[in-house]
Image 1 (cartoon, rainbow, N blue to C red):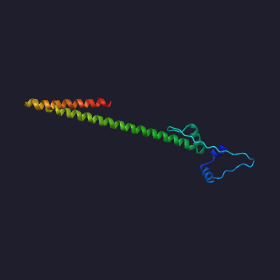
Image 2: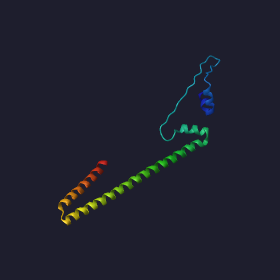
Image 3: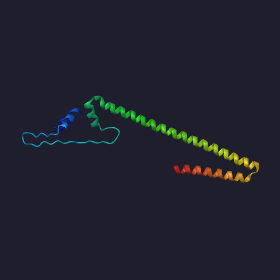
Image 4: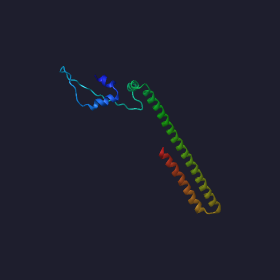
Length: 142
C-alpha cells in the first residue's frame, strides 16, 4: 500500500490530502498508513532520491547535476574574485607605506642637512614608531 502512495503524482496526493476520511476494510482488519520523511545534508541529494526524480521525469536528475556544477563554478569564481581583490588591496597598502616611508626619510634627511637636529630627531622617531606599528599589526593579524 505504501508503495502505491509513493508512485502517485503530486496532484493525486494533493487530492487525497483534501479527503480526510479514513476507510476501514470490510474484513475487520485495521489499515495503517506510515509516512516517512527523509532529510539529507549536502549540495546533492543521495542517489536514491535522484533516482526518484528520474522516475518522475528523466531530465530532472540531469538538471540537478547541471545546477550543482554551475553553482560550484560560480562559488569558485566568487572566491577567486575575492582573493584577487584582497591581493590588490594588500599591494596598494604596501605601495602607500613605501611612499610614506620614503617621504618621511626625505624629511629627516633634509632636516639634518639644514641643521635642524631637533626636528630631524622627532621626525626620525615618528618614522621608526610608524614602521614598528605597521610590522606589529601585520604580525598580529597572522
